[in-house]
Image 1 (tube, one colour):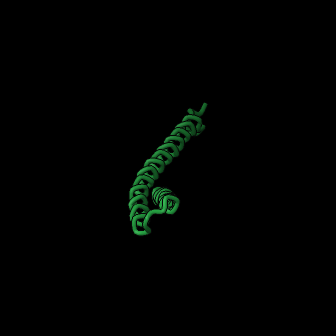
Image 2: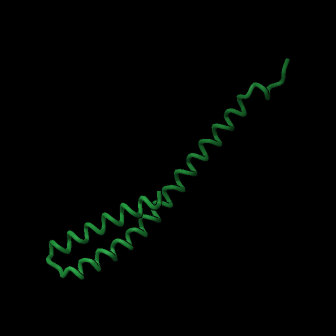
Image 3: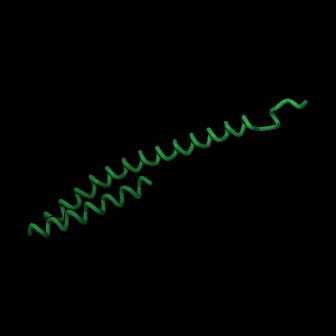
Length: 83
């Protein structure tokens, strides 16, 4: 998830910076430099956001799984005393 977020966010900013540079008639070298800087910065931001999202999803799934196992353990008829 982290690499996907980094790739998407970095590419999106790269394209936006190129479009912005063309729109304001900047020098191509300046456009490319700014786009590459934006790509690196926002790829890092996307990577961090992806790590946080993955951790959140993992913890949520783990908690739901453990809660369900606890419910099943309480309802297990093998644990109840036989009359």
